[in-house]
Length: 181
Image (tube, rainbow, N blue to C red; front, side):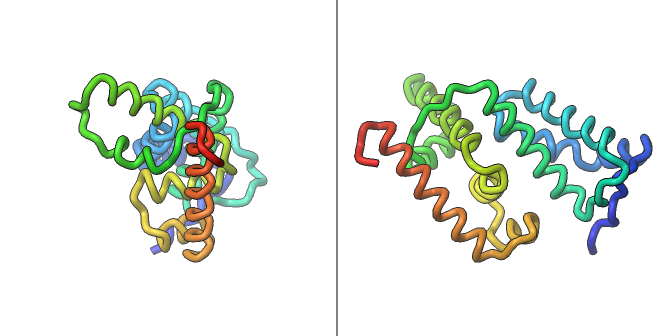
């Protein structure tokens, strides 16, 4: 069942309901991008303040959860872009590190933190829609058809975009390590 269309002109009661229903998801999306609780809270506040200040003449929101998720990712990417000196590290080395348990060695923990910082920077360099696709797939574990539905595109477009993005990030990482780009 589709969510009802949300008018751009929200009452305080409507905004409170939307906040209660979606604040945890907005926070998680922001945290995945920023890696910092305080920054994620700032992003969450920004997203809901923007909802409150939204132009009453704006088009109504059809899928509020998708709209807020996209808003959180975009606001978090903007924050990362403004705060970070971007470095490069390859994607193939990210997957095992991101899946590692917390009790790894101090050297590995440092390396993992550096890789996470790089990934945040790499995502910040991407087009926001592409970054959102990447996050939905590799951070949230969503399948291509679900991503396509959330972003109003086709599963084929999602698959091609993710493949090209992964190739691009791997190439950047090889160049960072001094290999052939």
